[in-house]
Image (cartoon, rainbow, N blue to C red; front, side, top):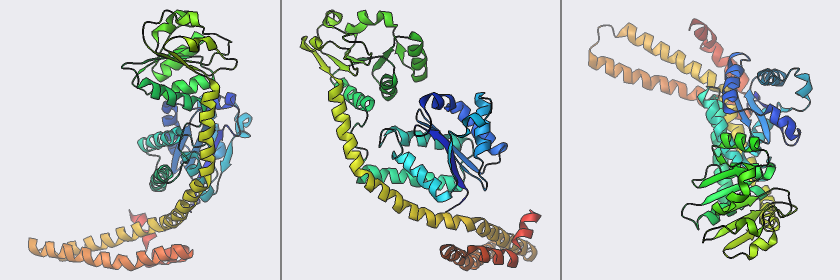
Amino acid sequence: MQNHFKVVGISFKNAPVEIREIIALDASLIGNLLTEFRDILGLEESLIVSTCNRTEIFYSDVEDRSRDIIALIAAKKGLGKVDSYLSMFKSITDGFEASAYLFRVALGLEAQVIGDLQIINQVKQAYQLAADHNTAGPFMHRLLHTVFFANKRVFQETAFRDGAASVSYASASLVRTISESFVDPRVLVIGLGEIGEDLARHLSEETFTVNLCNRTNEKSQSLGAELNLDYIAFEEVKKSLPNYDIIISSVPVKDFINADDLNNKEVGIQYLIDLSIPRSIDPEVDSLKGVSVYNIDEIQEKASKAVEKRIAAIPEVESIIAETMEGIKEWSKEMLVSPTIQKLKNALEDIRKDELQRHLKNASPEMEEFAEKLSKSLTQKIMKLPVLELKAACKRGEADSLVEAITDIFQLDQETARK
């Protein structure tokens, strides 16, 4: 395993939401940090995964650069002394363990909601940002593509991603199903606490209309701006209820919505989803003609069943990761000798070109073409045995001595120095 790969960060497991909010990074800041990780810290490769549940930096470097990385983030966020935050960050400096941890994060084993469907897309977005800022090198490129292939296997071979395993995700799934009954559905999310905000995020990319409402209009406005969703003022919500086809309420106020609030609804069907305890939708609402109410118990039952299925599938997911990591061990070993192989190729190519130039000064075009093909074929045959031996030595754990021997024989260090 490439022992330079490491990870440092915080997650819901070791930091409260108040700290995660402070450390969280948007795409613009991630781009700036990736550039500075490369140009200021000199990191070979870096990738930042920042969500509501985690901010973790995966990177390649010989040394443990956790403190430098945290200090740079703290400086960018204006957080003052880095010592105040060090204890909340956890790091993995073993290359094999750090790579396996990336698999566990991307596939949802480390998610707050086991098997979270969003995290793989968040990792893909993080990878795209790293590629855009030239901080994803050969190892990371191959590692991430292997992660994405493993994710396909999890979908195809296990039940780990089946069903809606959180209240907000289960609610979003229900809204999507109900919305198919309408030509142009209008959806209102009332209450933007943890569940309401998560629900809004789940629904933010849907094509139907989604509006937000919260007791503090500032929260509605800021979240709406972030997700590109419109909002209505809290004081206007009661008279606006009849305008919506689907209403989700997570306001912790008993009977916040009652039958009188919906009496002005024009002819048609209306669905309400109550995610509150105490119930924020009066049970009598369910008796109104054309109105259907789903309560928190129905949603939680659906989510709980999905969680049970996912937990049962964990051993299958871990088996896929273990199998994939064995393959990573092999190609990561070979990557250790890749620079030597490339240097040898370059050295032989320089010799080939020098000899052609020396011997073909007055040759005909036909002779030049023949010599070009012949010399390339010879250098490829010469390369074959050292490359095979280097790869075999990697598997035996004996690559270092062979790399040293080939470097001395072909004077590869001098060749690099001359360039």
